[in-house]
Image (cartoon, rainbow, N blue to C red; front, side, top):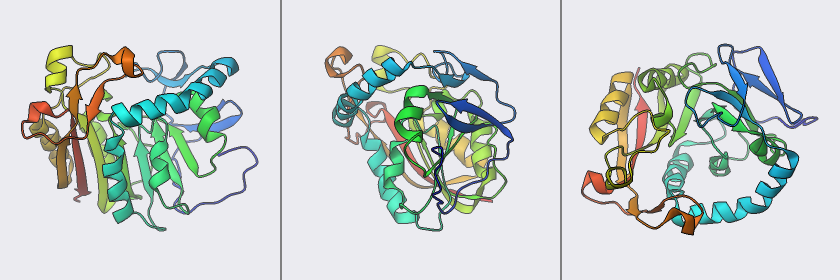
Amino acid sequence: MPPGSTHTFKQRLAWTTTRTIEVCGITIPVSESLAVSRSGEVGWDSFVAGVRPNSGLKSAVKSVLWPIRRASENVFGHQFLQYTLARWIRKYANDNTAFLECGPGDMSIRRFLPKTIAYNALEFGLSEFQVRRVLAHDPRINLVLGTIESIPLADNCVDLVACVEMLQHVPDVDKGLRELVRVCKPGAKVMITVANGHSVKVKTKGANKHFMHLFTEADFRGRAERAGLKVLEHEQTGKWVPVPQYLIGGHSMHLPIHSKAEEDNCYFVYLFEVQK
């Protein structure tokens, strides 16, 4: 929360940790067991957690370029995945919903939540740029540095979860899924997107070097079901267009097209219900 803020929001989750770290004048809770680093590898390396340093000058430059990059990603990237989640958020979220996002990135999904509730988020690697850009200005954000394999929350306290394109980066994804079930209430909804590790894109370009897992749909569905998640809705989407990345801002181009063949889709999208 920004310094001096007196705003209160409903369903603000209580992190089960006493550790904190100061980042750009913001106090951020840290999971008790997390080893925190301040290096450029934070978040990119699946075993290096903490905060990526950005100088004031670098943050200023990124602030100027950020709207351009976001516009490029909205048009050419995979931002369309968020709009599927937005539909589910509108259906299931209300003033009494305890929401949690794991791996929030730029935290843009918070714009779909009711304005009265807190945006609770668990992040493994955070940049100083995002602290300055978002945390310093939005009192709704309740963020902790931690890992999905050991979420610093009590049992049965979350109603709705979002995990967008992060579980393929988690070393022990099965433990992470079990942790989600632990902190969720019975009947809670869990929205997950993961990359198709056997898509035409992966077969052509090779896998992202930061991926820890190359999922098939059956593989990920099985892991989720064994953890206690029941599939309510599922889609495969994301038609890869092999355009040189340097022409569109350094990322791959995907279209929100649902192909019949699994390998022609870059993403698996799920709405689960917690069974326990």
